[in-house]
Amino acid sequence: MTLHFANELRGKVLLPASKSISNRVLFINATLDAPCRIDNLSQCDDTDAMLRVVNGEAPSAQPISPRSRKGQSASEMADLFGCVEENSANTQTASKRIDIGAAGTAMRFATALLATREGQHFLLDGTARMRQRPIRVLVDALRSIGADISYTEQEGFPPLLIHGSKLTGTTVELSADVSSQYVSALLMLGPLLPHGLQVKLRGEIASRPYINLTIGIMERFGARAMWIGESTLYVHSGGYHRTEPFRVEQDWSAASYWYELMALTPDSQATIQLPGLTANSMQGDSRVAELFSALGVQTQYDEQGVTLTKVERPEDLFLHIDLSEQPDLAQTLVVTCAMLRVPFHFEGLQSLRIKETDRLAALQTELAKLGIEVQIRLDSEMLWDGHVRESLPIVQIDTYDDHRMAMAFAPCAMLYDGLVINHPEVVSKSYPTFWETLQPFLSQS
Image (cartoon, rainbow, N blue to C red; front, side):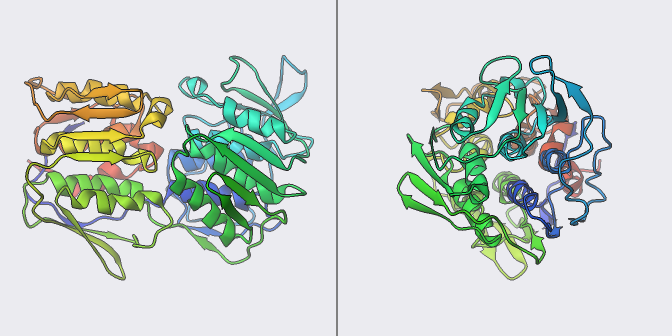
């Protein structure tokens, strides 16, 4: 896709619903005897993968169309039946195969959820990249409370053979410095266990806001979960309870690309309205409003949502930020700073190595095409001194099957007219309508 931006950036943008909230609600709702209706469910590949889990769809089953999905009714939140059965070479037991695709969150949540389905057997698999993404930390934790999970190929990585069983453990301990999704998966299991669950975390806790998001959603479904120390959580037994519909918020992570566009546009009178965002959101990525204020983007809240405008940014700016709690904003911020010629030092990026791609290496490679040579340090930090070298005459950005690479680099076309984004379809993972929504702001010539 070749991008040419118009001179003005003014309009209203309907953001997608939060996939982080959607996937947590789908997990919890699937445990209810009478699931509630979910309104404004995220319409993207990741949420479709989680729907395959809760609906028990095999890879060959007809996927639910995101374009026609309005809300998830009780009848649609069926129990896990109807999958194609496969004979496992390891156990000779009929297993229901569920293909998670490239959805990392769904893989982790599904591993925990399926482990509780007593008497049922599952083969949980995904893409070639998914088979390279480690899951041992979660599997070891689940095994410690009674889960029956084994690896069918490489130890510590999917595919997983899961025999649903009754989990009776009361305490689990795990490293929390790689992915908060392991912690969230365990927390959501807690109310289903006969004696609740205590979760002890080791090391620096990654993405703490996502853990708090999980707790907040659990509470909206009648569960009780809480921090009982700096690194320990406790979840009471008692299951989940909810009858009224649940409405999913708009996605603050998706909003970050519009903040980037606002920061980079030459239109001094630019204005973008983002309905549905709130200042008191449960989403940790709502911090994007604070982070971009230093980059010349002002956020105004009203009853409808957020309005973005441009303001003057400080001269001789240098950004030194720990993003361990908002790793999904890293690509957006790195690229924005590079385009604004703002030197930076971002820390807390260790989880980027095991995302859809190695995001640290991908950023380094693609920015070099634009004359930006960033340094990677300790597998968790990215630095740039502000020096710009000559860029390639024709810049084509590779996306590495990573939705955030495509969306973070698209605004660069404001400075590099005619920038090409290879494989733009990868945005379907979280924001399928991104290019369609961007179209009114592109040059029609």
